[in-house]
Structure formats: structure tokens, C-alpha cells
Length: 168
Length: 167
Image 1 (cartoon, chains in turn cyan, green):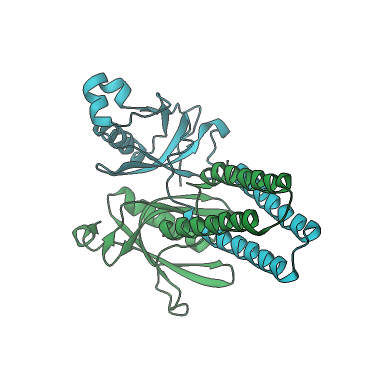
Image 2: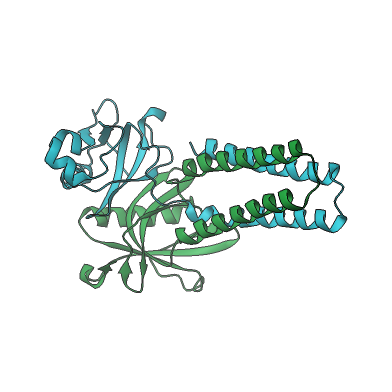
């Protein structure tokens, strides 16, 4: 959850502020050292405040949900399979979609293209991650284990009763 | 660019580590006070290391490029409009898509819905943001207000998909 990430950051920055406060209150340092520490921490806050937003929006390989509603995808051969999806553990209604990247493999590419064709026809697609950790080398996994393990995501048509067809 | 964000964070964290080092070298504090500060900063590093990834993948409020290829969109009625797009830089489509969230506006909703319909027929849609020509709105432009600025977004069919090279 984005809010959990935010809460963690707020808490972490609170710890730093508390640290600075204790330095200011309990140390016998000269005033200019204290001023420098305060200024340094302020700069740190500003730098992180400006650095985090450029990281947002880019696909992540963290926390890929076990079940998700596929909204869109983009495949870059040998780079990654990018998906834009909604975590179904939060309910079937689309909240804020999140972007993920999965390691590229040919079978996943084929399957997601088939799912994409259905998506274009208005059929809702559910993705299920069948293996929690994708193989580090898809090529070797293909040879060794075949389709089932190499392809870590299965795409299914969502039952109409569960998710009514999306009409924009 | 995501790299700039990462560089900024690394710099900021190095500054903090330097601060800790200075404290160890030049402060005449008790060892337990120094240990306490070190533990607090280690906790800070640990918490942010686990908190930042949880923020990744969610749409960005800023940074919509001047020109982009629209991959998908989602409208949350009367709240927000989400775009998933690839930046076009010097006629080259960047491979990695980025998600954006824009404030809801009726004109933007209509414009993206129209673009979405054209996309379904197989057309490639190019979005263009023109902040300079606020008063010279093209007929199919959507105007939204982002913070205090007015932003024009126009969605056009790519004249020839071959003109857009992949990075």
C-alpha cells in the first residue's frame, strides 16, 4: 500500500527530527555546529522531498499481487513485461491502478497478447501469479521445467457476475 | 527521470552517513549516546529501504511529458484520470511506460475516452501537453487545471507509427 510506504517514511523522518532535537537540547556543541546540523538535516529533507516524486509512476517488481485485474500491458522483448493492474485483494472495483514489471519470457509474452486481444473486446481479464518468485533466468527455466513454471502468470477471463464488462 | 530521483536519494543518504561519521569523530559524547544515534540512523535507513518500494508503481502527480504515447487510461469519476504512457523524446518512444494521475475534468475525460475508442481500432495515440499555448486551444484539446497552472492535452492519431522509433 502506498499509504503504508508513506507512513513508514513519515515515521523515519520523525526519528531523524527527534535525533536533531536531542542534539540541539542535550549536546554542548557550539551554536554554529548545531546550526550546521540543522541546515544539513533541512537540506536532507528537501533533497528527499524532491527525489521521491521522480521515482513514482515507474513500474515496480515489488509486491506483484497474487490476483489482479489486468488493465493494460506493454511488452518489450528481452526487457520486461509491463502490466498496469488492480490488486483484487482490495476488491473487484478499480481503485488506483499500479504499474508492475515482470521478467520477460516468450510464453508470458504469448499469453499476455492473447489476454490483451480479449481485453480489447471488452472482456475483463484476471491475472494469477502461480509462482511467487519468477525464475531468475526465464530461458533456462523454459528448458528445465517447461511451460508451467516458466510462465508465472496465468490469465483468465473474469466471470461476468464477478466483474461486469467495463463500458467507458 | 527515475535516475535523477535515485541519485538525489543516494546523495541525501550519503550526507546523513557523513553526519554520523562526523559525530563519531568529533563529538565528545558518551559511547552509549553515539551508539543510540547510530542505531536510530540505522533504523531510519532500514525503514526507508522498505517504505520507498511500497510507493513505487503508483501513479505520479507530476512529470507528464510534453509528448507521449498513450498506452491506457482509467477514469475515476469526478476524482482523477489515470494515464499510462510512454515518453516520446526526439521522436523516440521510450520503452518503459509511466503512470500518471491527473485531476478530473470533463474535457479531459471526453478527450481520453475518444482517444481510447480510436486506440481500440488499432490506432496509436499520441498525447501532447502544451502549456505555452493556453489560449490557442486546438479543437480536440482537453484543458485541466493542475495546481495553479492550466494544462492543455491534445490526443492525436500518430500519422505513421513507423515514424516513432523504439528506444
